[in-house]
Structure formats: structure tokens, C-alpha cells
Length: 384
Image 1 (cartoon, helix red, strand yellow):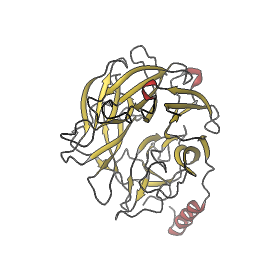
Image 2: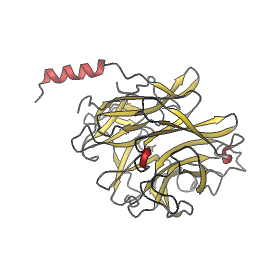
Image 3: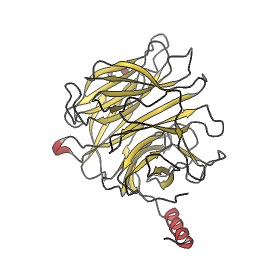
């Protein structure tokens, strides 16, 4: 057992330890970085892929980069120039996913990229789309597969994310603002047996209060076959606006009563993660694995910015049960306070052995919002 003095020395050492060197992943305006490690692609297994969204003048695009040295270095391998985002129509909020099993004609190992386009079109022409793209050669070339959803009116939909349910269907989750009569925004889901035709639209997280906005949804499948979902809920807590929540599912489709907001993520000391949560699972530091959630911000119980704001991963060794604890993030971002760019929608990729984690996130370089990456240890700061 560690004594109080030893624990204090350990915490002081971790706090004073220099952060890993962050490197530029994409040296231009960019947002929504995502990172995956290929696990179903045969000889390419272990390759790390990243995606970002950007603009080439008035053309919206996604940029795909790859690393074959464990995330030490990356090189750009593709650019996805979606014609639906041309002429400054807008591109945003992409996600990256590798199929663990075949979906229709797409075999396991197919890499998928889902993205929001069209939200900046003029109101009379605006019909925001959630677009699905696929690569059968580990991210080098891409084809448009389908529109997951098209807004029925001028209001936007956002932030698609993907998962394969236990029944083998491809599930897409996204934020939906189109039901303005009843809700400012809600989280919804659809599914597809082939990646082309999408059906069974239903609410995932919603609230009777019109102003409450669930958003920023992400779902992963855990090693035991269950599913873990994170999202933010805004405008329901004036002290902790846009706190991170989670819920679970046994089959990847049924996540329970959509009017149940779920369970808030917080530490034993009452610290909350706020804004843009994303989730990953690591083989450590917990002996049976750990759920890792990273948010844009970290605040105290009373809502003040916490010392680890913009610099912290929240971890739980019991699949969300009980309090969460803090791990220093590989990329500490200073000055984060509910704005675009700084640590906006960061993403994590734990090492296979659970001892380290690769982070991708955004920060300003002068006036330009750039994407950075770094790898650091998965060492708990303190379980408090």
C-alpha cells in the first residue's frame, strides 16, 4: 500500500513531468480529428489512420493520413473532396470507422468516413446531409456510398458516428435539429444492412424541455460485446452546461428510454467533463481494461475551471460504474473555455497493451486552427 507521502510525491512528479512533444498532423486550417488502428485489414493491421475536415478554397474536404510506425510519424495518403460541400456549402463533424464484419457488399476491413455537408448553404437551398464514404484499400481511395440522412427542412443535422450492432447492421447516430416544433436538438439513430438504404429512424436521447440539446454522440463496442455511448447534454444544468454523459447497450441498437438523459461523467471530487466528449477503450491502466473519455473542458463541482482543464482524460475501470479518475492528456491545451478550435472534439487511441495513448486534437497556431498529435503514458494522476 502506498503511504500518503509517497502518493503526494507521485502526484507532484506527474504534475511537474513535461508533456510529450506535440507534432503537427495537418499544417493548415482543420477540425474534428479522428484516429483508428486497423484491426480487420489483414497485412495492414496495426496501421493507424487519421482524418480531419478542411477546405481547399471553397471545396470542403477530408484529409486521410497514415502511420506505420505506431503513431510516431504520419503521411497524407488521400483527400476526399465531397462535391456536396463545394462552393462553400460547408463541411464538418466527420468520423472514421473500420468495419469489423461485412455489411452488404462491403467486407470486414472496409474503412468508412461519415461527414456533415451543406449546412452553410443559403436557407432556401439548405438540406444538410450526413454522407457516407468508403475505402476498400485501407484509406488510399474513396467512393461515396450513400446519404445516411438528408434534412427534410432548412434546419441542420450534425456529427454522424458509426457502429456495427450485434445483429451485423451498420448503425449511424447523429444530432438532429429538424424537429424544431418539439426540440431544439435531439440525438437520433438509423441503421442499414448494406450501407446504402437507411431505415428505422428513432430517437436516441431527447428531452421534454425544448431548450435541452443532447449532441456529440460516439459509440464503441467493448471487448465483452456490449456497447458504450457518450454524448453531451447542453442547457439542462446551469452550473455544468454541456456536461458529458454515457449510457450502455447490450446489442448496439437499444440504448434504453430516449427520455432518460443517462449518467453524467464525474470524479469523486465532483469534477465534470464538459463539451465534445469522445470515448475509447484501453487494455489499461485498469487490470480488466478502462473506458477513457476526453472532453474539451474540465470543471470543478461549482463550475469553475479545474486545474486540468483542457489537459485531462477521464477514466473508469468499471465500465462507467462509480466515480471516474483523471489521467493527464498527452496534449495539454491552454486557455480552453467553450470555444471552437482549442481542444474541440479531441480523440484518443490507446496502445494495444494499454500503457500509452495517442491523442489528436486542435489548437491555434496564431489565427489558424491546426491539428496536432502526441503519445503519452496512461498513468492515473490520482483516483480522487
